Image 1 (cartoon, helix red, strand yellow):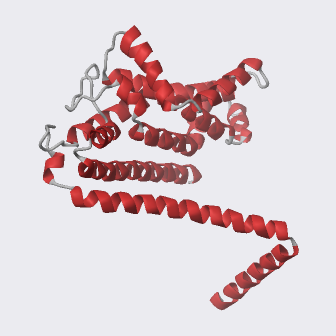
Image 2 (image 1 turned 120 degrees about the horizontal axis):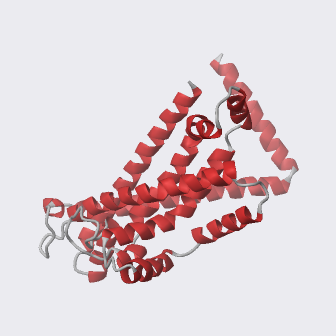
Image 3 (image 1 turned 90 degrees about the horizontal axis):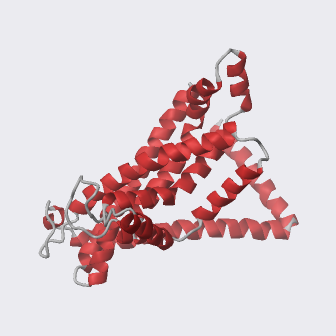
Length: 295
């Protein structure tokens, strides 16, 4: 039975290659697509291997001391600050982003000019460089609102930065939910809010989580915007009105000083592991939600 399956698969592959031979343009596109995919995969692996090779030999217990000073340049305060900033930013951005997506998909009139303007504005905001967000956060939050350099100023800036991504992915996830779900719910007498929060949102949750995963990766790896808003404080703090540096800013500062290049590579390893770990946990949660929905 296994042999028969292999023969059938081989026959399909031969037919595919025969069709490509008859269409040279399709053959070229087939080759270019696979070449692009191979280059992308090799680039990612090359970057990961380079960071690991340069960073792992520079690990030492001093890098994980609680306090930062000129002797150990510990990254532990930056790790704690990164987790605090990520959590606070998501608390601010996710409800606004998902709520905006619910309005655009469930309440706004289809074809409305106002909705078109909102979508164009949202797409435009997603393409603005992070340094511009940093300058805006510096002028709006640090100076105009007198927050000074603080975690809150940085998180508000990051929330504005990732909001377009969350809105777009949440909107697409909600639009992908079949309309028959809502029709069936309305037919059973459920209201609109109940239909949205008990049926449509859970069905769209895997797609919404994908946007949150991408937003989390951008938050953790952001540098330019935080330098202008949250500052480069070297202590770990839960006080959102105090300055603090994230792990990415910590790595940037070590590299620019030029005295702790090895420690900067070690910080890059920790940052890489943190991003991969967050993505893995989020994807695992999304798969569980998808399985529960299918069940």
